[in-house]
Length: 320
Image (tube, rainbow, N blue to C red):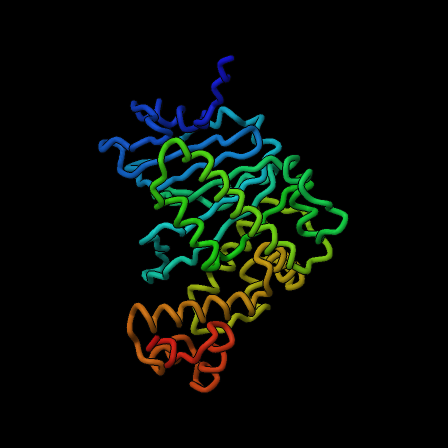
């Protein structure tokens, strides 16, 4: 008996190819030169999980409607961003290297509306059926954050920084050459491993109550984050950030921690130390130059903070 052929290419990829006047070959769409450069690849592993790899630049925005909108209604989105080489964010004349992270949103949260995606896109989007995940776990024993996400009944968004072991899996998805016979199997296992590791991280978060989010509040929280990270030499002042956000201090702190899993100052300090590590390693700046550039007047204090976050003293790190 002949096995029924399963759909393995997302409909949205075929729709995108049609708009560009090209076609999908081996689950991959190459952007025609007149529209830009790069590629998209798409995989439907089964009815529970699918993935898009997007790494392209377009000359102008193209609106692609998702033909699977009904399927999306039960899906949780994991959107990996800043995970491809040479991805940068540019702001107010400065170039800050964007930290690799993943957005995790319930189906009631349109992350493309909240976090604008322009003509330069480099991300991996994995969608997983919430019902499928629910069958794998006993939610009564899990954290409120995990329960809220997997129940998928209210608009929620979380962002998680990507640590080295996650980045390694992402690199295997993007770079590893796998025979076509095993490609779907290999990539599904990698996608599920990423999801599992992220759920394990989310369970560590200690929020006792989750607040349903709206796009206005999320856009405001992201503006606050950008404002803070543009001025790494100046520690954040909650009252000033709350005035900038036109929010109460308590609401700002509550929503920031719910989305990022960290207090405002802890998030700032973690990003500050990652930037210090980059300046030491990539820019080859001296320890004192990095410390003063990032607002430390006491280099001993800088050295202690750096060791606490990176695991070794800055001088040792720069020579490693």
